[in-house]
Length: 459
Image (cartoon, rainbow, N blue to C red; front, side, top):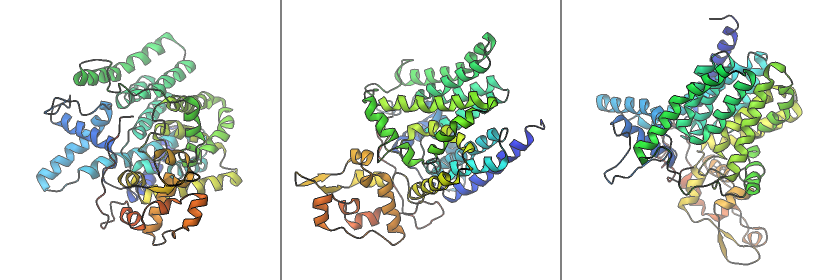
């Protein structure tokens, strides 16, 4: 092993070990999303040899990228073998363990990258904040594809950054088979490499490295839809008004990425100083480009908020790479400490209770509030969650956590509701809140079985 790689690799392994321990402690070990259940079903069909995932009704059951199902297949195959030989059911546990490992692995990669340019103390500070005070922590418990896209793409970036461009692009290109929209990340990664290493040979190498993932994606489309270009998203468009999406993603009271990942502000403020280092200036431009591209793209998507999710899951790759420049802001304690504490407190109810539990409660119960000015009852819906902080996911999850801690909110005054609006807690009977509150840890044997979120239209 090269001497210049040994210290970064050692630090990377230490970071991975720490976060594996933390994330295993908060691991849920159960299925969480309807989208995930569909991908698991396709993985089982792949194991059985039915790659097209056609049921008895000859209908395609999954319109998602095949990559997620391929990644899930080994753990599901092992779980099936364990159940047959030992009679132990561990399918959900082994499958969701993939997301625990994915979370720790990404932070290890960040540590490996930063250790080439910054002292170990700064690297540790950055990964601890990113791993515990952003939405990355809750997504080690939720089975969505975006965290996988980020880790695989960042692994490709690290390989390319440290002299393995062909292998790196081959790895990063696999994200195209997970989510077709990761072309924005992969495309910018290719442009970043060619800007630093302009040559015909480099362009050919990058192009050849993308052929396997493109071929896999086309194959998955054809076996399901008998068309190379049809990927199942017909009717779902980039139809949202741009300004509505930009406001929702950046500034809304219920879904803002700054609200769900406060340390992102540290990354934004520290970006210029990060970019001023000549050896990493191109990397800084890549991180910013991914962040801006994702904000603009998903602001136009019909479901810009990516529900059901904790915050806006579409932006996980952009948010997390844009957090990396906060390594230059660790000395600014006046702004650092409040943002880190706020970020940790935001993630806490999602990690302890479950990031989707409040959304599931909203879908399964009739939340009603007193309508202001016009009189009569009004229903709380997802538009309220998106834009009204009083009814946001954070507020709902905190109520669930308070029930678990034995300190539920007190009922509000009906007269105040008529003048100021109904509080979230009063929009549902206390018994409903109490029945929905469960500790979301695999080691908590008293945890009630929790259903996955209802399958939603593919995002």
